[in-house]
Each structure stands twice: as structure tokens, then as C-alpha cells.
Length: 164
Image (tube, rainbow, N blue to C red; front, side, top):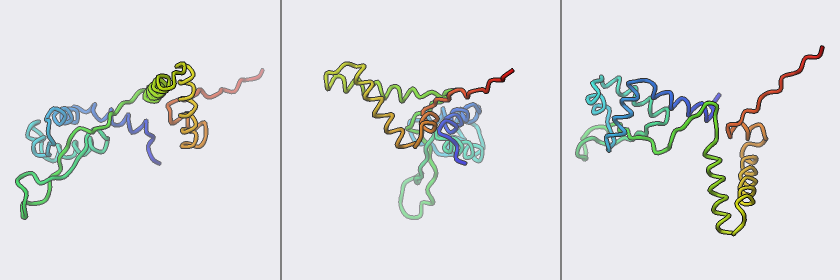
């Protein structure tokens, strides 16, 4: 079974709890250029194997991105490309319990643009933006329970009452 979007986000944030991974992430982030395994290992006093495994883990979790390039001057016979890491361009945020602040921000921005463009009151613009986004989410997820889960809402489950 595939992990939920929320599970992937929390795993990415949790991966930085490990001191070695956090140090590698910080080094790559500050470097200002793509960082190879050898450079990272040397900079942090790690073996190449440890650096490689932890950098790959950070890539799998989505906090780093990787690409391949030849480390020295190019040309035939210079060897196979090395793996280089850079900070991921996408932001990783997680909250417990999950909240969808991005959705709220998107709705507010859309409503503000509409209000300015059409000269309609913000409340009406926000209602229309919410209706349109709700319709799109409904088409994408199929039912209200799936929409609620995808947007971070977990309604309390009704507890059956005991009758005496």
C-alpha cells in the first residue's frame, strides 16, 4: 500500500532528526553548488559509504535532489558520471494533526484576485473560490470522505451511545 502524502511529508521531516543526515543536509544546503559523495564525506569526517547511504536516504525522503555529472573536465574516457546532491526545490512541511494551510492560503489569494478584478466583495469572492476548489477536489477524489482525508480533516468518529 502506498504511503499517504502526509506520511511521506512527516517521514521527510523525521529523517532530519538523525544527526548525521541533518549535518549532511546542512552542508549541502550551505555549499552553494551540487555536492558529491566524496566531498560530503570529507567535509564531515565520514566514510564515503556512510555519506552515500545517508545522502541517498535524504534523496528518497525528498529533502535532497540528485543528478549525475562527470566531476572533472569532460571528454571521452573520463570515467562514469558521479552522483551530486542539491537541496530539493519543493518545500517540505508537516503538521500533526495534518492541516492544509496551503489550501487556505490558495483560496484567500484566489478570492483576493477575484475581488480586485471584478470589484465584488471579498466574502462573495471567497465563497466562489471555495465552491470551485471544492468541485475540483470532489472530481479528483471521488467522494467527500476522500476529499476530507486529502485536505487534512479527520472528523471524530461517532461513538455509539450505551442504552441503559
